[in-house]
Length: 322
Length: 288
Image (cartoon, rainbow over all chains, first blue to last red; front, side):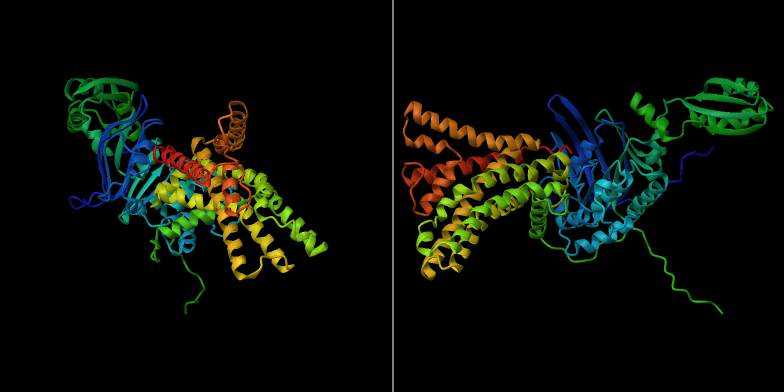
């Protein structure tokens, strides 16, 4: 069986103990009676990590706490071994792509990114700004104000200002929003390159397709709580109690369905055509191990076995709905 | 035989910055410069330049008029009209308008647009940020509290009506600079305090104007009706810095109280306004 997901970059090599760029421990944040983040803990290593969750799940609040912008109500955040809230120097090693759309709209992109470079103590901030704007495919000499840019261009300006000082940690809040498909591919490649070069990149998103493309390590936040974390496929494999749906094409779908119900740990079968059935199973490993022998015993020829929910959408729906 | 072409493929991947790095002073200077540009409408559409240009020009009109008179009339007649301390009364409207316009523009806008979050995500502390912003606002205010008087001093000196001798010139120059500092400091902190309390620029601007008007009405009503003595007039915030400036120039004070009371009241109000700004920003959550 093959996953329908797009190829993801190889996970980075494990870091030496104690060198984790981001360590979040029992982190909570509440605003009055509203709990935005509730007791989440995770560690992020160099490479790309996706912070996944629906709108309002607490992703942005978590990122702001990691960036040192918002004090936690409870728990601790350590970035590169320091507290970003207290240690201003470590903030110079963090790049933040916020969701805000109105940042200095009247400025030119070059001026805005240069300012970001100066804020992060670059001597040749304009030179660095020119370089990073070219990297995100924007013209550094464009005289137009940022307000006249398309949403995708503004996203790239924000990414440029976060990268201008070559941060060791990049926190990007929904960076792919508003990009057209070509820009999106370029941005994903850029983020993957950053991860591969050793930068610790945390990308939040509520779009599952994006997350699947960005990296295989996923942190899932739902309703302020950590719903799951780890390799996407690993998360899925750990959920033994979750039903899996598999489409099977065979020469005799009805006969194969009956045999699978009896011998392959299958909970239910739905025959949609003479040569096609959909199988529900709680034990996908047992199913994988037995389907071939069951089909052979029933004298049915297997044509195709296709998982229907081996994508992030299914994992996410299950985790949030639990 | 292969043909050579002038073609080059650029590496457009992520490249690290390998230049020098500077200190927090450069970062603060950037915030200061950027804020001044924003306040004056530089590199912005023309409509953003109108208010600063008009208010600043208003402050120079009396100086131009005085110098014009000095050129036309005989020096014996003009000598009687030279009144540097009195000039602060003529620029009060410009100072108020500029504070009400620029103060909220520099602070409230940052919070409303999310720029404050961007600043705080950098190695700047809130103290650095507020210091740079206060310096920017004070610098802009110097254009109406300091520069017109320097312009007047320079003009009078050119037409032979300046102070006699180097020492007197330096004393007057010192008083002009100190007067500009007193008025700019007061208006800077008032503007920043109002802008700290609300993200809405219009509310902050109205708050600055209303605070000055309300304090004046309240102080004068209490003085007239309750007959509690001249000290109550120290609550007239608009007059407080001007009273200190008049004492600095050794002209007649506005409020009939001992100097220590006037200076003490001004110091107290400046401390209170600074405390509002610092307290407000220390407890402020970055939510954008």
